[in-house]
Image (tube, rainbow, N blue to C red; front, side, top):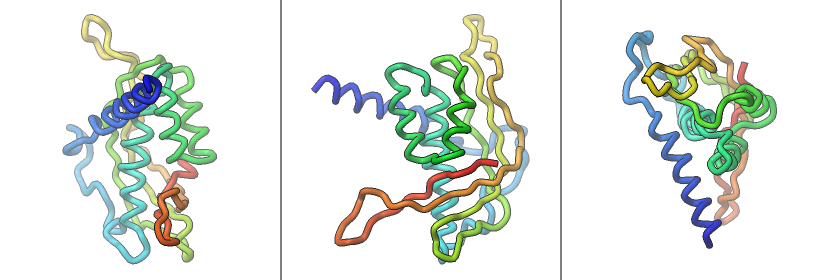
Length: 187
């Protein structure tokens, strides 16, 4: 029972860590403009799902918490499990190797992600490609004197191509299963 309570508490902490990083507006000094392209407004080929999945489920609720606590002995396994459920293949390996030498806890600024251009979904609705412009800042925790920590990872308005795959979840009812969009590649 204690183990289950500890796991639930750890999962809640990881989710809270991810949700606390959601920016209400763009960060000062970032380039103005829409956060999403007009391609994300389309419903017919699930483009809106792809955009939402990448920004919210994949980035804010999986990648950010992994960056924050992925090396912590208690919270790390939960963060790694969440990351593994949202990032597959090369994308998962890229993020895990990127954070490999980081300390247990880091300071992660809320990323600024703009989706630009069309959202391309394959004819069979199995894969999608989006283009983003991303700004990230990950540092070691601030020093005791209040100085910002050492920069571990930083990107400023970097263009990325993101490949996603539509996969079924275990939530099925009456022969119909829900699905999710997972990240296969970050280039």
